[in-house]
Amino acid sequence: MKKALVATVAMLIGGLLYISLRSESLAMFRWFAMLGVQDEVHAVRALTSAQLGRLPGWVYLSLPQALWYFSGLLGFECIWSVNAATTRERRAWILAFSGLALGLEIGQWLGLVPGRFDPLDLVLLLVAWSVAAAISSLGRRRLLNSQIGDL
Image 1 (cartoon, helix red, strand yellow):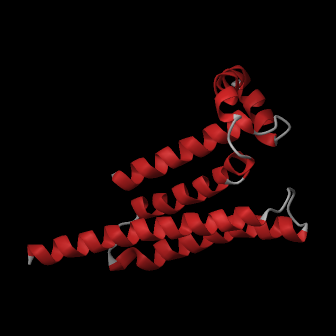
Image 2 (tube, rainbow, N blue to C red; image 1 turned 180 degrees about the vertical axis):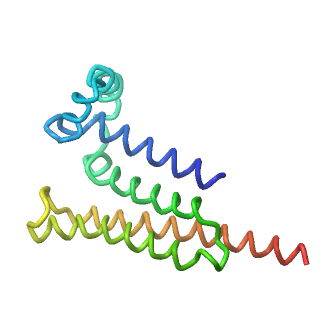
């Protein structure tokens, strides 16, 4: 349950940064208009952009993607328990998800994916993976210790 809360908070913070500080020329703003929520998005931008606008550029340019990735990794941990029967499936999904996240960045570097490559994006993705792996490892150790204690 704690992992799910951390994953949700990370996703919400990343989304808030993205909605508040990124250019309205991005496709997601057209999606907001199609969904009829552009007024709500503009209200959020008006409330937060003055405060968040003081943040360094990497916080709203690179951190949201790392938070999305971190949230997804923890989400996979929440979906599958850590028992041996699901380890292979969990790893396959995490590998596919990681391939997508890192592949998008590498695709930008190679000019295959729209966007501007930034090596800091890759660094923050690796940091996100490291933190998620540490949290997952700690959770598995606690589970194992509690199972041993039950013997």
